[in-house]
Length: 178
View (tube, rainbow, N blue to C red):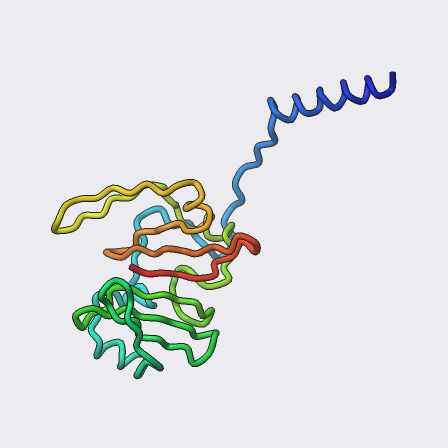
């Protein structure tokens, strides 16, 4: 008889939780932070490097430690003297076309390595769809729910920033600028 009451109570509890879930409002941005409502702009940091020349990169970062080929016709300039300043810059036809940031001391404003994902979601509106207009046409992309969870993309000026979020820590582990 006790098992029957326990089972009935358990079934009612599960039903209640299913039909009346606990909806908590999103956390407010932390003091000192503000929410970006419009398209992000980048006037400083690595994001502003897109389109810059090789000479401008050398002036800012010096000679790379090494230069590697990529699978996409650009060269990776590798700056990995220290893990805290790890940076790869993709150069094609003498101009920056992409960058990958893994060091927490690299300026990728408004993002940063080890930034908690909740803080990111409070600061920046993320969209699962985006349009890219090129000379060859306009392309529309839709990110899956998994992409939005571990690799969301944000448009900043004429560049796109892909954030790699560590599944276990919930923090940004890498940033790709395209």
